[in-house]
Length: 289
Length: 335
Image 1 (tube, rainbow over the protein chains, first blue to last red):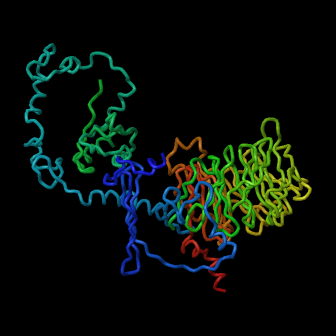
Image 2: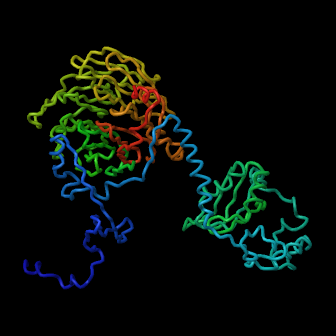
Image 3: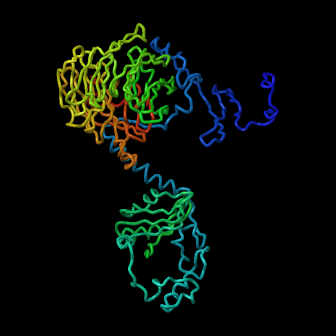
């Protein structure tokens, strides 16, 4: 039995690379006295990670109480028993640098730093290396500012879109939109306006100052949109449609303002605004029915 | 300064403590284990396991031989710091909320909770260093708090008085030998419990932190209120820095209200106040939850904070911290 146990199982042939095995740590000494340590480990997702560290060793001599020096030689115990000397990855890490300068008027300084670094800086940084491209003529300006805006349709939109709407209005109240090719629900047909009761009347007022934002990047966040639109006035609601499964943005959002004039201003200013890698299209939301 | 993050606990921190030399840091949390860390690099020396409930409090003897912990499992345990072994268990009728050694390490006080018909008490246990396993079974002194239970307590200079902070916001002074109540002062607003008491290096004065959003510097001898530091959030902890004339306060929204506020509004920052001028001089952010406990290195070169988020952050101060001075201080230096 013991013989069997000692013999290596044929299945454990060394030629097979065990995927869970990690290459050994490599330490090379550089000319300038630093060391380069290349080690491998698994991250939280179970992926193999190569960690390259360049370490410069500085010896700092410090005179301490003999008791303290004696304590430094204590072996580890409890959960740490048997672990090598030095901080381990799973319990100890180094946080990001914190600038701490005591000062009497620290509040004013903090507010100023936030204003400079937080809002203005980031917005400029975001737009710094963005190339603006018009969707109509592919020129270097926003689509909304395109000189051909009124004469040409965007490249990716069907040309017949604009003409169809007028015809629909002219069609008779009872017709089922036969002439236009697209179905028009009864309450939207001419003559049906005002008829029928609307539900959820309390939302109606909201709609007047609600903007529909389309062509939103799928990486967008509600907070970012809020920041973007809050410059024009008080934003009461930000709704970003998300895919139920992937939680990514679906590409459109609704922004409600407290004041309609703010909304109008935002609509004018933000239409054609480059956000992330896309250009926003902003319009007033259509009435929900 | 770059903080060192210690993530040895799975639940919120309750207390952290440096030993007298400042090379070790002990932390206790609600997750039943005690961790010992090297304060210089954040390496974990070891853990002390044995408690059956959340650990509320920890203290280390001045010679760093024994460690005392008080827990919600109604026990006080004494540990051998070096080996991690439990050398003594004292059973109490209720949970133990605070333990502290006398400055000479010969006695240990334990504050017990008021619950299940038992009144809150402060028990004093004699500690023997000759043979660690043989400790006195019964407390040598027992103070019963009949009016309002004690939440925190500590020893004044030379172990002469026991100073206790109460649930109703008052601070009282007991004789360290007889347990007789000598003084009682309503230091904080009524019914705002005192969450922490920490002493200065020479233990002639101490700082209290309270839920009434203020911290007070109080004299040990006659409980005179020397200074008041007003914050905008309930405080969980306060400490006095030995090197510079500062105090550090820690607090934040109560844990139950945290989910309703953002990190910035939650005020999860360590606040630095000038000890003498009572001005707030800066904040250090970093935690994702309220700060439950702050402790300062005995040499004043670092401080650590433990939060509701389960992290301990150790900050070694850098130059601007030591350089900051008021105009008057500078003038005095020139003379």
